[in-house]
Image 1 (cartoon, one colour):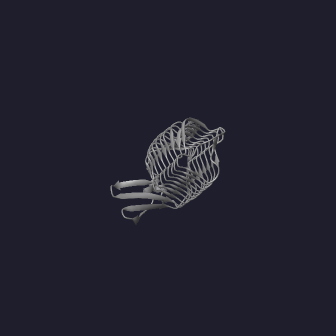
Image 2 (image 1 turned 90 degrees about the horizontal axis):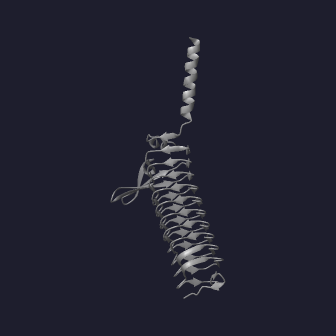
Length: 293
């Protein structure tokens, strides 16, 4: 009898051990519980099958006409997680009511995969924002968002359209070794510190028009397979595009107040500097001076 009980206990222990080693899948909307946690929200190696809506994490506060804000006071970290549904920090309940989220702690989505829409439109990040080595398989929206501290999208990939229009990067914006497979827009964004896009790949139309670059800008070794519009922009410091390759790029109407480094740049069709202003020398392209028409 004792032997039989021992065998049953052993089988139960092995079964529980095997179960604990299976991939963790969150099929419950547990975020409502997590939102009450005033500490650090930390998740690792999990798959989530429910929509993650940060605008529902705490009480909404009216901050403008039909505009509500949800403040999230604690750090948020997801590492090696998969999100099968949308991740939202912006939500419209109807045509006239909009909900946004403000993040007062650090926000980290490191080595994560987003299978559905990601929408952080008009979000405010007061802490560090880190999306290093993440994959975005659907549309991504950071339009009108502001980033107070360093921002990281290094080694990430965007399969569909990504929007950063009218965004504000107060400290360093890091997009090194990032791949944009579809249209990417940073139109009218402000880079208050260094903007790092070196070794990145832009496969479709890329829009940096009307941008302000108040520190150094780097596109070294980057590849632009479609049209790049970086017209009517202001570069207060140096811009480097050494060893980059272009199909059709326009800087028309832009102002260059620092040095322009375009060493060994490759142009397949056109590089346009029409009506541009250079405080120092004009850029050298393969030993030739580009005409400032």
